[in-house]
Length: 76
Image (cartoon, rainbow, N blue to C red; front, side):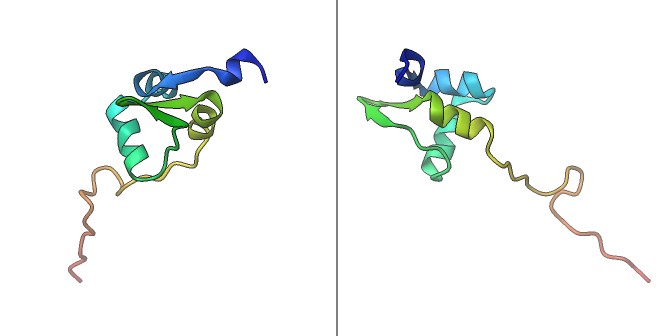
């Protein structure tokens, strides 16, 4: 195993690698979508393999922008 694959990243470091906020990454942990290797003290740590998995994950989106999440009714 190379040194790069053994390196552990804190939540802020992993979030920076992914281009997301650390609060979003913590939310993903809480929802079971992100799987840190372990918790050290008060911090979660991630492997590069998990960061890569998250980087290439299938993303889901909410309602279409501009729709406000509501469907317009047609008046015919």
